Amino acid sequence: MEYQFFGKTTDKISRIGFGCMSLKAGQSTAASIIDAALDGGINYFDTADLYEQGANEEMIGTLLAPHRNRVFIATKVGNQWRKDGSGWDWNPRKDYILQAVDASLKRLKTDTIDLYQLHGGTIADPIDETIEAFETLKAAGKIRYYGISSIRPNVIREYVSKSNISSVMMQYSLLDRRPEEECLPLLENHSITVLARGTLASGLLLDKTPKDYLGHSIADIREIRTKLGEIAKQYQVHPATVAIRFALHNAAVGAAVVGIRTMEQLAEAIQAIQEQVPEETLIQLSKYTNAGFYSDHR
Image 1: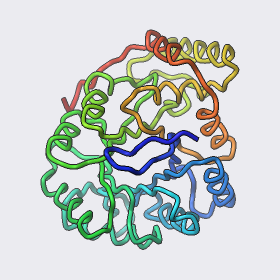
Image 2: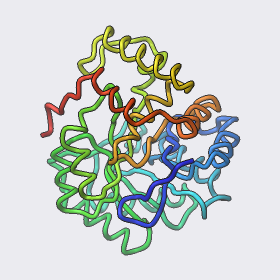
Image 3: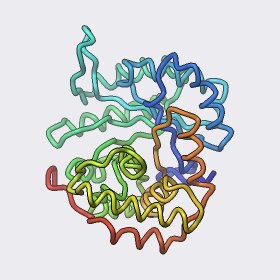
Image 4: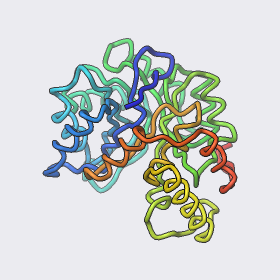
Protein backbone atom coordinates (compact mmCIF):
# COMPACT_ATOMS: atom_id res chain seq x y z
CA MET A 1 0.00 0.00 0.00
CA GLU A 2 1.07 3.58 -0.63
CA TYR A 3 0.46 6.29 1.96
CA GLN A 4 0.37 10.08 1.86
CA PHE A 5 0.43 12.79 4.48
CA PHE A 6 -3.03 14.06 5.32
CA GLY A 7 -3.24 17.81 4.77
CA LYS A 8 -0.61 19.64 6.80
CA THR A 9 -0.60 16.96 9.49
CA THR A 10 1.89 14.21 10.30
CA ASP A 11 -0.80 11.54 9.85
CA LYS A 12 -0.59 9.31 6.79
CA ILE A 13 -3.60 7.81 5.05
CA SER A 14 -3.68 4.93 2.59
CA ARG A 15 -4.03 6.05 -0.99
CA ILE A 16 -7.01 3.74 -1.29
CA GLY A 17 -9.76 4.78 1.08
CA PHE A 18 -12.46 2.28 1.97
CA GLY A 19 -15.84 3.80 1.11
CA CYS A 20 -18.05 2.09 3.68
CA MET A 21 -21.45 3.11 2.29
CA SER A 22 -21.56 0.05 0.05
CA LEU A 23 -21.31 -2.33 3.02
CA LYS A 24 -24.68 -2.96 4.61
CA ALA A 25 -25.42 -3.53 8.27
CA GLY A 26 -25.85 -7.24 8.86
CA GLN A 27 -23.90 -8.18 5.72
CA SER A 28 -22.42 -11.59 6.51
CA THR A 29 -19.18 -10.89 4.63
CA ALA A 30 -18.54 -7.44 6.14
CA ALA A 31 -16.12 -8.59 8.84
CA SER A 32 -13.97 -10.65 6.47
CA ILE A 33 -13.87 -7.79 3.93
CA ILE A 34 -12.77 -5.28 6.58
CA ASP A 35 -10.11 -7.70 7.85
CA ALA A 36 -8.84 -8.23 4.30
CA ALA A 37 -8.72 -4.46 3.76
CA LEU A 38 -6.60 -4.06 6.89
CA ASP A 39 -4.33 -6.88 5.76
CA GLY A 40 -3.99 -5.08 2.43
CA GLY A 41 -2.76 -1.94 4.15
CA ILE A 42 -5.89 0.21 4.01
CA ASN A 43 -6.08 2.42 7.09
CA TYR A 44 -8.59 5.06 5.94
CA PHE A 45 -12.28 4.17 6.35
CA ASP A 46 -15.02 6.62 5.35
CA THR A 47 -18.64 6.51 6.51
CA ALA A 48 -21.42 8.98 7.41
CA ASP A 49 -24.21 9.30 9.94
CA LEU A 50 -26.62 9.44 7.00
CA TYR A 51 -25.91 5.91 5.81
CA GLU A 52 -28.64 3.53 6.99
CA GLN A 53 -29.64 6.07 9.65
CA GLY A 54 -26.41 5.47 11.55
CA ALA A 55 -26.34 1.69 11.24
CA ASN A 56 -23.33 1.90 8.92
CA GLU A 57 -21.35 3.87 11.51
CA GLU A 58 -22.31 1.35 14.17
CA MET A 59 -21.18 -1.60 12.06
CA ILE A 60 -17.89 0.06 11.09
CA GLY A 61 -17.27 1.09 14.69
CA THR A 62 -17.73 -2.49 15.87
CA LEU A 63 -15.52 -4.00 13.16
CA LEU A 64 -12.72 -1.46 13.59
CA ALA A 65 -12.76 -1.29 17.39
CA PRO A 66 -10.06 -3.99 17.81
CA HIS A 67 -7.82 -2.05 15.37
CA ARG A 68 -8.58 1.50 16.51
CA ASN A 69 -4.96 2.47 17.13
CA ARG A 70 -4.00 1.85 13.50
CA VAL A 71 -6.96 3.15 11.51
CA PHE A 72 -8.07 6.62 10.40
CA ILE A 73 -11.85 6.93 10.71
CA ALA A 74 -13.77 9.58 8.78
CA THR A 75 -17.47 10.30 9.02
CA LYS A 76 -19.83 13.08 7.96
CA VAL A 77 -22.53 15.33 9.37
CA GLY A 78 -25.16 17.75 8.10
CA ASN A 79 -28.01 15.58 6.90
CA GLN A 80 -30.50 15.29 9.75
CA TRP A 81 -32.94 12.39 9.65
CA ARG A 82 -36.55 13.29 10.36
CA LYS A 83 -38.03 11.68 13.45
CA ASP A 84 -40.52 9.70 11.37
CA GLY A 85 -37.70 8.30 9.19
CA SER A 86 -39.30 9.63 6.01
CA GLY A 87 -36.13 11.35 4.86
CA TRP A 88 -33.62 13.94 5.94
CA ASP A 89 -33.14 17.70 5.92
CA TRP A 90 -30.00 19.76 5.50
CA ASN A 91 -28.77 21.18 8.80
CA PRO A 92 -25.30 22.78 9.03
CA ARG A 93 -26.13 24.71 12.24
CA LYS A 94 -23.67 24.71 15.11
CA ASP A 95 -26.08 23.35 17.70
CA TYR A 96 -26.96 20.38 15.50
CA ILE A 97 -23.33 19.52 14.70
CA LEU A 98 -22.39 19.67 18.38
CA GLN A 99 -25.25 17.29 19.14
CA ALA A 100 -24.73 14.93 16.20
CA VAL A 101 -21.05 14.28 16.95
CA ASP A 102 -21.86 12.56 20.25
CA ALA A 103 -24.16 10.10 18.51
CA SER A 104 -21.48 9.34 15.90
CA LEU A 105 -18.81 8.89 18.58
CA LYS A 106 -21.04 6.40 20.38
CA ARG A 107 -21.85 4.44 17.23
CA LEU A 108 -18.21 4.41 16.12
CA LYS A 109 -17.11 3.28 19.60
CA THR A 110 -14.34 5.84 19.79
CA ASP A 111 -13.43 8.87 21.86
CA THR A 112 -12.20 10.87 18.89
CA ILE A 113 -13.16 11.02 15.22
CA ASP A 114 -10.09 11.43 13.01
CA LEU A 115 -11.89 13.37 10.26
CA TYR A 116 -15.31 14.99 10.62
CA GLN A 117 -16.71 16.24 7.31
CA LEU A 118 -19.59 18.50 6.41
CA HIS A 119 -21.70 16.28 4.16
CA GLY A 120 -22.51 18.86 1.50
CA GLY A 121 -23.07 22.59 1.81
CA THR A 122 -24.22 25.67 -0.07
CA ILE A 123 -23.03 29.25 -0.21
CA ALA A 124 -26.24 30.23 1.64
CA ASP A 125 -25.25 28.21 4.71
CA PRO A 126 -24.16 29.94 7.93
CA ILE A 127 -20.58 29.00 7.09
CA ASP A 128 -18.96 30.93 9.95
CA GLU A 129 -21.23 29.14 12.40
CA THR A 130 -20.41 25.75 10.88
CA ILE A 131 -16.68 26.44 11.11
CA GLU A 132 -17.10 27.53 14.74
CA ALA A 133 -18.77 24.19 15.49
CA PHE A 134 -15.87 22.21 14.04
CA GLU A 135 -13.29 24.33 15.84
CA THR A 136 -15.19 23.82 19.11
CA LEU A 137 -15.12 20.06 18.58
CA LYS A 138 -11.39 20.13 17.85
CA ALA A 139 -10.72 22.10 21.01
CA ALA A 140 -12.79 19.60 23.00
CA GLY A 141 -10.83 16.67 21.55
CA LYS A 142 -13.91 15.08 20.00
CA ILE A 143 -12.49 15.37 16.50
CA ARG A 144 -8.92 15.66 15.29
CA TYR A 145 -9.45 17.27 11.88
CA TYR A 146 -12.35 18.51 9.80
CA GLY A 147 -13.16 18.93 6.14
CA ILE A 148 -16.02 19.22 3.67
CA SER A 149 -17.55 17.00 1.02
CA SER A 150 -18.41 19.32 -1.86
CA ILE A 151 -18.02 19.91 -5.59
CA ARG A 152 -19.11 23.57 -5.42
CA PRO A 153 -16.23 25.97 -6.18
CA ASN A 154 -17.85 28.90 -4.37
CA VAL A 155 -18.31 26.83 -1.20
CA ILE A 156 -14.81 25.36 -1.39
CA ARG A 157 -13.27 28.84 -1.75
CA GLU A 158 -15.13 30.05 1.34
CA TYR A 159 -13.85 27.21 3.50
CA VAL A 160 -10.31 27.58 2.15
CA SER A 161 -10.25 31.25 3.02
CA LYS A 162 -12.07 31.10 6.36
CA SER A 163 -11.31 27.75 7.99
CA ASN A 164 -8.64 25.21 8.87
CA ILE A 165 -10.07 22.38 6.78
CA SER A 166 -7.64 19.55 6.13
CA SER A 167 -9.53 17.95 3.25
CA VAL A 168 -12.18 18.24 0.57
CA MET A 169 -13.95 15.15 -0.74
CA MET A 170 -15.03 15.61 -4.33
CA GLN A 171 -15.92 13.62 -7.42
CA TYR A 172 -13.00 13.25 -9.82
CA SER A 173 -12.41 10.81 -12.67
CA LEU A 174 -11.59 10.59 -16.35
CA LEU A 175 -15.26 11.34 -17.00
CA ASP A 176 -15.45 14.19 -14.51
CA ARG A 177 -12.38 16.40 -14.75
CA ARG A 178 -14.17 19.59 -13.72
CA PRO A 179 -12.07 19.94 -10.52
CA GLU A 180 -8.97 20.50 -12.67
CA GLU A 181 -10.11 23.97 -13.71
CA GLU A 182 -9.90 25.63 -10.30
CA CYS A 183 -10.43 23.38 -7.29
CA LEU A 184 -7.47 21.02 -7.53
CA PRO A 185 -4.86 23.76 -8.00
CA LEU A 186 -6.42 25.83 -5.19
CA LEU A 187 -6.41 22.95 -2.74
CA GLU A 188 -2.92 21.80 -3.64
CA ASN A 189 -1.64 25.35 -3.15
CA HIS A 190 -3.08 25.35 0.39
CA SER A 191 -1.90 21.80 1.24
CA ILE A 192 -5.50 20.62 1.62
CA THR A 193 -5.91 16.95 0.75
CA VAL A 194 -8.40 16.01 -1.97
CA LEU A 195 -10.26 12.78 -1.29
CA ALA A 196 -11.42 11.65 -4.73
CA ARG A 197 -14.69 9.76 -4.96
CA GLY A 198 -16.29 8.35 -8.09
CA THR A 199 -12.95 7.50 -9.69
CA LEU A 200 -14.63 4.69 -11.65
CA ALA A 201 -17.61 6.90 -12.58
CA SER A 202 -20.06 4.46 -10.98
CA GLY A 203 -18.70 1.68 -13.17
CA LEU A 204 -19.09 3.54 -16.47
CA LEU A 205 -15.32 3.33 -16.95
CA LEU A 206 -15.47 -0.44 -16.55
CA ASP A 207 -18.42 -2.64 -17.49
CA LYS A 208 -21.60 -0.75 -16.62
CA THR A 209 -23.99 -0.17 -19.53
CA PRO A 210 -22.88 3.13 -21.15
CA LYS A 211 -25.15 6.17 -20.87
CA ASP A 212 -24.84 9.91 -21.38
CA TYR A 213 -22.82 11.28 -18.47
CA LEU A 214 -21.78 14.87 -17.71
CA GLY A 215 -21.67 15.86 -21.35
CA HIS A 216 -20.05 12.62 -22.52
CA SER A 217 -22.06 10.67 -25.07
CA ILE A 218 -22.40 6.91 -25.14
CA ALA A 219 -19.90 6.90 -28.00
CA ASP A 220 -17.45 8.96 -25.95
CA ILE A 221 -17.68 6.54 -23.05
CA ARG A 222 -17.14 3.55 -25.30
CA GLU A 223 -14.06 5.22 -26.77
CA ILE A 224 -12.46 5.95 -23.40
CA ARG A 225 -13.28 2.44 -22.18
CA THR A 226 -11.58 1.01 -25.25
CA LYS A 227 -8.52 3.16 -24.55
CA LEU A 228 -8.46 2.07 -20.91
CA GLY A 229 -8.59 -1.54 -22.05
CA GLU A 230 -5.71 -1.03 -24.48
CA ILE A 231 -3.55 0.56 -21.79
CA ALA A 232 -4.46 -2.14 -19.29
CA LYS A 233 -3.48 -4.83 -21.79
CA GLN A 234 -0.25 -3.03 -22.67
CA TYR A 235 0.90 -2.83 -19.06
CA GLN A 236 -0.81 -6.06 -17.96
CA VAL A 237 -2.96 -4.36 -15.34
CA HIS A 238 -6.68 -4.23 -14.58
CA PRO A 239 -8.67 -1.42 -16.29
CA ALA A 240 -9.71 -0.24 -12.81
CA THR A 241 -6.04 0.32 -12.06
CA VAL A 242 -5.74 2.73 -14.97
CA ALA A 243 -8.86 4.65 -13.94
CA ILE A 244 -7.89 4.90 -10.26
CA ARG A 245 -4.28 5.73 -11.07
CA PHE A 246 -5.49 8.57 -13.30
CA ALA A 247 -7.19 10.23 -10.34
CA LEU A 248 -4.27 9.57 -8.01
CA HIS A 249 -1.65 10.99 -10.36
CA ASN A 250 -2.90 14.53 -9.73
CA ALA A 251 -0.70 16.00 -6.99
CA ALA A 252 -3.71 17.40 -5.10
CA VAL A 253 -5.31 13.98 -4.62
CA GLY A 254 -4.30 12.16 -1.46
CA ALA A 255 -6.59 9.15 -1.73
CA ALA A 256 -9.18 7.54 -3.95
CA VAL A 257 -12.19 6.64 -1.81
CA VAL A 258 -13.58 3.52 -3.46
CA GLY A 259 -16.97 2.07 -2.58
CA ILE A 260 -16.33 -1.55 -1.62
CA ARG A 261 -19.01 -4.22 -1.13
CA THR A 262 -17.29 -7.44 -2.21
CA MET A 263 -13.92 -9.15 -1.95
CA GLU A 264 -13.55 -8.76 -5.71
CA GLN A 265 -13.98 -4.98 -5.49
CA LEU A 266 -11.51 -4.84 -2.62
CA ALA A 267 -8.96 -6.83 -4.58
CA GLU A 268 -9.33 -4.51 -7.59
CA ALA A 269 -8.84 -1.44 -5.39
CA ILE A 270 -5.71 -2.79 -3.69
CA GLN A 271 -4.42 -4.03 -7.04
CA ALA A 272 -4.56 -0.45 -8.31
CA ILE A 273 -1.81 0.41 -5.85
CA GLN A 274 0.24 -2.70 -6.42
CA GLU A 275 0.23 -2.24 -10.20
CA GLN A 276 1.95 0.60 -12.03
CA VAL A 277 1.09 2.70 -15.08
CA PRO A 278 3.65 5.24 -16.37
CA GLU A 279 2.92 8.84 -15.44
CA GLU A 280 3.21 10.01 -19.03
CA THR A 281 0.58 7.47 -20.09
CA LEU A 282 -1.85 8.75 -17.46
CA ILE A 283 -1.25 12.33 -18.60
CA GLN A 284 -1.86 11.34 -22.21
CA LEU A 285 -5.23 9.88 -21.22
CA SER A 286 -6.48 13.42 -20.66
CA LYS A 287 -6.66 14.06 -24.39
CA TYR A 288 -9.45 11.49 -24.73
CA THR A 289 -11.91 13.45 -22.56
CA ASN A 290 -12.89 17.08 -22.21
CA ALA A 291 -11.83 18.72 -18.98
CA GLY A 292 -15.13 20.59 -18.57
CA PHE A 293 -15.97 23.09 -15.86
CA TYR A 294 -18.60 23.71 -13.20
CA SER A 295 -21.32 25.83 -14.78
CA ASP A 296 -23.07 26.35 -11.43
CA HIS A 297 -21.93 27.44 -7.97
CA ARG A 298 -19.00 29.39 -9.35
